[in-house]
Structure formats: C-alpha cells, structure tokens
Image (tube, rainbow, N blue to C red; front, top):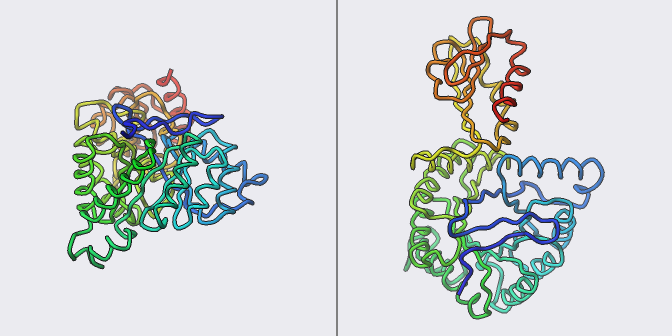
Length: 373
C-alpha cells in the first residue's frame, strides 16, 4: 500500500509540506538555470536565498532544481542547508546522482523511469530514500518514455498504443517496482505538451489509482508566458475542478515567479467556481485605454510582489479612470483609481480619500496595511 498523504520536508530546518487527500493543492516551480558553486557565495548566495524566501512569500511550497551532475547535486545539497523551503532534486539518466543528493537535506527526489536505466538502479535510489524518509516522484513525460513504450507509441504518438496509454503503462510499471521494493512514499506525474493528453492521462490515473497515490499535474513544454498560461489553464482548471491533482507546476518559458503566480490564479479560479473565496490576494485591474489618468500597468507591476505576499484574503482593484473606478470595482475590499489629475482611494466602492497622484504608492501602502490588521 502506498501513502495517500506524502510529507515533504519537516526534518532539520526544512518546512513540512503535506500532499494528498484533503490537503491544499501545493504549488511548485523549477529553477531556470544550472546551479553552480559560485551561486552560493557572498552576495550572490545572499541574493539567491532572498529570492527563494520571496518565492515562499508569494505561495511557492516546493522548489525543484535540475541536478545533471555530481557538482550540481552537491551544490544543491549545500543550498538545502541554507533555506527552509523544501528543495527537490530532478534526476535523469544517472541514479548515482540521486543517491548523492540523499546525503544532504534535500526533501524530495524526482526520477524519470524512461531514462534512469534498469530496475536495479531504481532500487538503489529507493533503498537510500527509504532510509532517509525522503519521498520519490515518478516523473513521466510523453517525450521521454521507456524505450519499448516509446516504440509502441510511435514518433507521433500513432502506433500500437497512443501516448496516453504509454504514459499510463509506464506509471503502472514503475509503481509495481516501488511496490516490489516496499517503497510507499511516492508521488506520480505523467505530463505531455498537449493539453488534451495531459487531461486524459491524469483522469485515467486518478480513476485507476483511486487517490492511493498523490498526483503532481502540469503541462510540460507549455511555451512562453501567454501561450503557456493558456495551455496550463485549460488543462489544470479542468483537472482541479474534477478533483484531480494534489500538487501543480505551471511550466512556462518565463520566470519562476510568474509560474507561481499563474498557478495561484488557476487554483483561485477553481475555488471561485465553487463559490469559495480566493486565498490571499485577488487583483482586479482594468486593461487601460485612452481615458486613463492613472498608469494601471506600472502600478500593478510594482505592487505584485507585495500583494501576492498577503496572507489575508483581499480583493484589490487598480483602475485607470472614473468610468471604471469605484463603481465597477465596488466589490473590491480596497482600490485605487485615477480621476483627472488626482487619484482616488476607495473601499467597497466608497471613496475614502482623494490624493495627488505622486502620493499614490505611499497612501496605498497605508491603506493596505490598515486592511491587513
């Protein structure tokens, strides 16, 4: 039997994250650059630790790093001792790298059965992970299936079986190995760059596994910011609305911060569709037009980090003119809008202060602080 709830971290100084059953959907992202030893030194190291702390503030629960070689594994291990967020090692090809990562306070290992090699390689990782109490994610991608299943699916997913069937078979095959070696601390993911395939494979896994194994869901190689957000939203909103998915990553050719923010917005959209209030901040802002007397784009961009760090539920409106100001945003808890040469601050559609535009940041900060009390 596998664990229906997986605990990630919670040892040494690492914060615990619980995934599965009735726990909130956990958001994760993946670091965009190769980690090298100099990244941890001096001011660069301090800046890296601060950035990881800010990721936690805006809602990131897990941060994954590629570990393509031993130097990367050891550097990641050192970083894990410097931060409280659970760090995940992403391993392809060489099981020895996964075993080396487990010498450090790394909170989770991801391996890809399509390229990790023979069963004995997986067994060695599982033995050490079990001794350390570290969970392992079976991470399958449509583009890196085990060789025999890749051949059956065909280069274009047209063969004896399609890619969805191949992914499901690969997951079931690997879970059988984990079960053979009595390793219960496991998560599963099966991703494709196609939204349709991503939805289909995860629906099948949810049904077959009967929630016995937590599912990590996401669209792989989803593309740049706009295209990637659209594709991820189409797949993840569908799955999460059906109760499929325990942890998510929005894969984007963009910043880790935008991956986290996009994931938060998708999760909140699902909550709102159920009549629940969003967690943290919900930002309402007008697109701006020729009537604007307030730069909503610049103001919103400047305030994003602080707003997404809010722990108390709050709806914030940033509006460009009196046409779409307090009236259209009267549902917002607090808001700011342009009005000629002035700026209006309001709560629930009621204007509470008229200020000079150059004072907007200072006055808005005071309004937000007051609301957060």
